[in-house]
Image 1: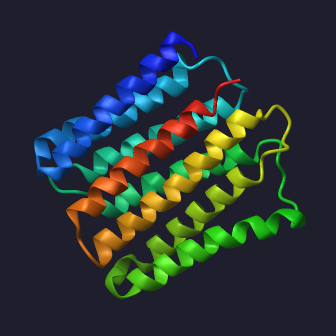
Image 2: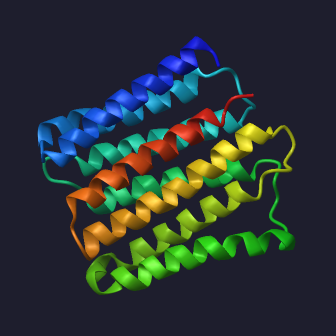
Length: 217
């Protein structure tokens, strides 16, 4: 592994640690600094620090990370804009879907891979449904995109130019993203929990880091 990649991973872990500690202490100023900063470091790493990867895959992953950064900023504003943050992360997942579908056209044989992700997101939707209120339609759309993103990551193992490590990194990141967002939905719409918030953030940045590292050739 290149020294720049090691530096990138270390910087991400350190910044994420500060962000998680700030969230655990309910330190809003710390969260406003370190939450976007951590995602920015991941974006920077995907764009410049890891060794060159296949194009346009890298550009699409960087685009997804840029939308994620926008979502993080919207969610830590003094008056959080949850619906706008949700829209930004929806766009991030759409960028990831396109990236994971490059050289990997949808085929009937791939459809069974979708079922586990639909089951997880469907169960989460049913559980939080009473608390969604006016956000039911946006959350349904978001979880559909989340399921599709993970599904496309799971089916790209035999796509041209996709290395085994790159495939596993992206798939691992996609699965962790699903876990993080399910915890977020439960925490926000059913049972608020500081421990759940810590798990959600840790899984979120682990997901983004693995997806960013998947751009390596």
